[in-house]
Image 1 (cartoon, rainbow, N blue to C red):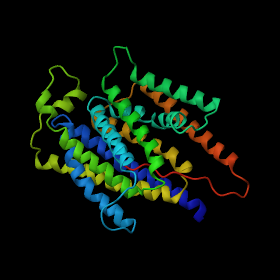
Image 2 (cartoon, rainbow, N blue to C red; image 1 turned 135 degrees about the vertical axis):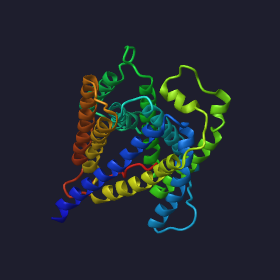
Image 3 (cartoon, rainbow, N blue to C red; image 1 turned 30 degrees about the horizontal axis):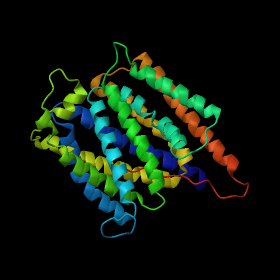
Image 4 (tube, rainbow, N blue to C red; image 1 turned 45 degrees about the vertical axis):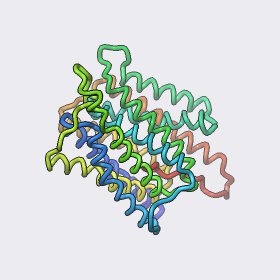
Length: 325
């Protein structure tokens, strides 16, 4: 029962974590039309940073996190800051389902970068799956068509920078704990948001700008108490979501848990339909199906590959924890 129950509990815990994370999308879309994106990132980071010390205590350590690889930590933080900020800019312009569908190309990009950066071997079947997955992304984005939304570019940039951050995470996880990585990334979020705060005053609101750029250059305003609570709640959502993600991946191997990450797409479709009456287009549905299907196939082939390289009585394959941001 324990061998079967643990993956089931892990899947249920991951589903809860993804549901919690989906609340972030709702919050950003709800208040994004009234505030500057960097203002939201700043207030979110002010709450998230102290939460990393709780993570540190849960790991049984005291004091400030330290690292022997600060360059990698800060580079990862910058990539995650870019990913999070451009993701929110995309949310300002795109339906939730479309945003989630583009985000689901993340595993495909991670696989591609694993080949280009880490030198991992990918066979013809996975290359074909990657091609099919990226074709699905093109169906969703529709570049060059009248239906093209500039917000799609920010969604792609968010996915790209996240995939690059995963490459650094794979190098850092041999020396730095999840709490350490979470601390440094949150610190970068805070510093970057403060450093870029004058951007809106220097550039000013852009007449006729799309919703994503308007989100970036909108003048900062003092939020209402309710809206400030929502912005602060983004930090709590991150802390709660990461806690449940870590718990889920401790219950079962990552190769079993990873496919359940695609539940995020279902949540986005449901929230978009219920709250904003957003009905996905057929091209979005087909593109999402191609992207999710190819992503699942890549995960399957990776699992097969790991199984083949193991000796019959050899140790279990190394499983990587979910990256923390």
